[in-house]
Amino acid sequence: MAVILLLVVPILTMRLFAEEKKLKTMELLVTSPVTITDIVVGKFVAALAVLAGMLALSAVAPVALAPFAEFRWPPILTAYLGVFLMGGLFLSAGLLGSSLTENQIIAVILSFGALLLFWLFGWAGQVFAGTALGKVLSYLSPLDHFDQLVKGLVETKDLVYFVAGIVFTLFLTHRVIESQRWR
Figure (cartoon, rainbow, N blue to C red):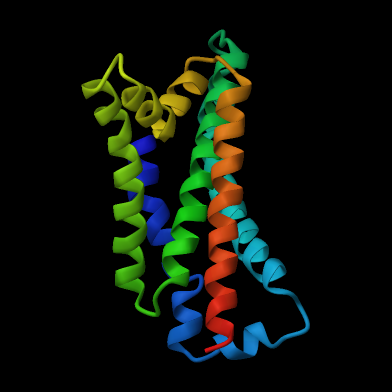
């Protein structure tokens, strides 16, 4: 599922700001009576709603099989929570990539490259295992936090990682849009 998110989410977010810039409607958007924070959060929530809809469609299978098989629901629900949080982090990174350019293809490449770089932090953390650098790189990898949630383990550090990552990338997106407002 993490690989699917890595491939699908940049494509889902490529048009959020890049298309606004390409069609020259970005000026109209930032001069509207809503704040830039409202614009960024609104686009993020809209993309998150699409992701939640996709997850809800995938949840039909376990619900349909529940009368015929016995499921342990807490690990399944924490796995869905992990997919939702990781998708949210990837969406916020894709939103940042889309805010940096007016070309959709470049937005996909930027967001995919950034996500792939963070993906590789886990591998680099294993290479430098036992060192302080290895611990930092492992902590920065979204896969390590995602794996804990898929196993059914809900730890505060994993939830804080995803929420902080989402807030930080949305903050960076806000700053990029605000800086372009004055150009």
